[in-house]
Length: 212
Image (cartoon, rainbow, N blue to C red; front, top):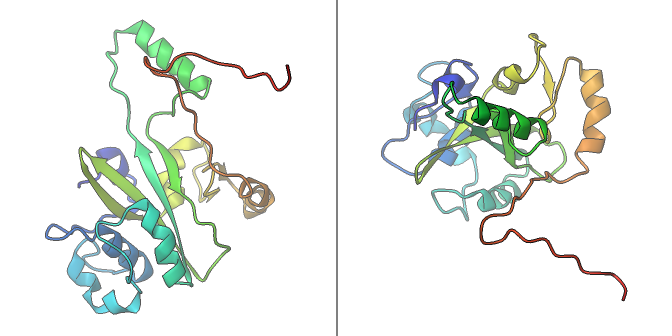
């Protein structure tokens, strides 16, 4: 899967092209743990490192549920996984649709366009090596890539243009390490939250009294 132009232009991601197998998780992990100066997007750059990581117990293609198993096997590595929320295509002349979208974003009911959202956050404390992955989706296909620079990837979320310190849970950007260190201990105590909205088949609200 190719990177969308918005992501490619950030120069923050290494996308190893594994055209003949379904082991994108393996190649993404290896590209992060053993960065290649030349041809970083080719699988051959990482052949010599394949046996330096424990892949036992994994079934390829790797699902999010299997990453916990990978972390148990490789006790010096932690992994976080994110997804990209692409823009919603709206007719620029449709004033009502644009207003509705902006209202939903302001109310927290809709993610901002081109947002980066966590879908798997490690539960382990800090280890020697940490890897941030982006999970791309295209139809029924999915593809892991390594986020080489989270600061560059989420730079559009802030007016701050220098290197930033980003919370892996909420992805809020901080301009100083001190501000990040003050925020992270509390934020990391909470599970990532999501909003579920009713559909046409389930659109009624019921209240159960605690006492009668």
